[in-house]
Image (cartoon, rainbow, N blue to C red; front, side, top):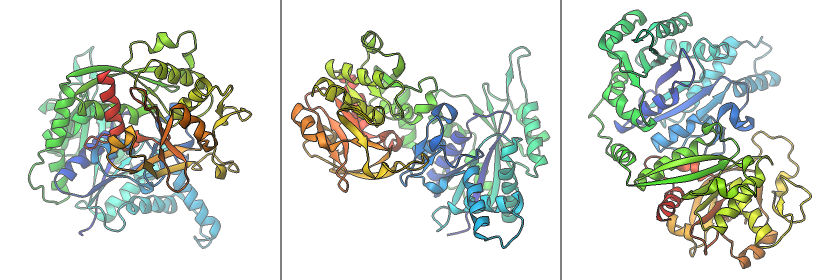
Length: 534
């Protein structure tokens, strides 16, 4: 295989412009032209990974198949490319410094003074290239977190400058994403923020090769010409990214703007035939022309920030399109749900999903939600803690185990139907110590979920410490809640269902992490199907 080509995506003016979506869209287009592509994210925060971050801080923590707790942008990468990411695809400043300090303690630097340059930047460059080791990919896209000018991003920007100088312009390019705001008072789009952002990049020693301009309104050729002139790029390298109704439109818009062609020309790679994107366009057609309309309640405790449930929200989009259905998601805070108002909050819903989470806050609201769905025959989907709440509710109200609970919430419960895994009982650290990543699950061939998957063995991603307590398995089986998915190595329960219910499934794993545009997750697809039929 030829030398790996590197593309860096930086952001300017403001955060949350959509670097991850632009990176994923470009990767999708290059993949559609026959190139093997991967994307990685460099995050400038000092946490070793997002695993210990409150979802309010940084949105959802995404989990890879190999057990890495990563930035939520990796979810976008997988959903767009349909290719798994790994530990190597997300690097944080904390991880970089941890590695360098460990080397210094071992004496690897032979007594030299350890500095940001060259030691930190060398480690960053090593991590950037690590993702392409073994010649698995022809093109590596690296998204730099934060905004150009941030103090914490400087070592990453310097590392990009060095790589660009070392590899040369035919092997490495920089795409800079900036904002062109519209000022309603003057009725104008303003390019000055973009000029200042590029100036900050130039001061760091990097001339961007392509500019992607985020904007609410279409950009005229005059504005493109002006930006090109003041920012030292060709007019064909100024790309418009106007607001769209769904992130999944962005690849098609970037194709229209010839972003992929411009990239390949600058990297001296053949463009070949223009990608047809047939599957992608069909997905968009279904998404925009629904035949059914339903409302699904998502009950969780981080609902003020939808990014906390990003993968679930996107799984609804994928499964909705598959069913030609528009899904209105009603976010309901589990803390506000009580015995007095549960019917008021959940009335009129076509289906209910109880979301994952940690800790005791809002737990009783989730348990009441599971009871309401079970007793009113409403399609119910419990994920991770959502499954555990369904188990607790069933134990209390069907098995009559008064005070049944999870030992996470009440370590003195007389009926610990959810308990800590034996090997977790001596663990005191919080970071990276859960059951993480892909684990096998054997499905009973007489179960509902077996019909959805169409096979008896699956692999799903986990992120949890507490488990169904097998001591009570016979009690649940005899009363109608069936453990239908079991880990073949440990015997741990992965899936429960109630066969007499319209659609009642609880899963210990996170199916939302595996749903993509091309392959919507079968559990979400069938949950939405059941909601439509209701």
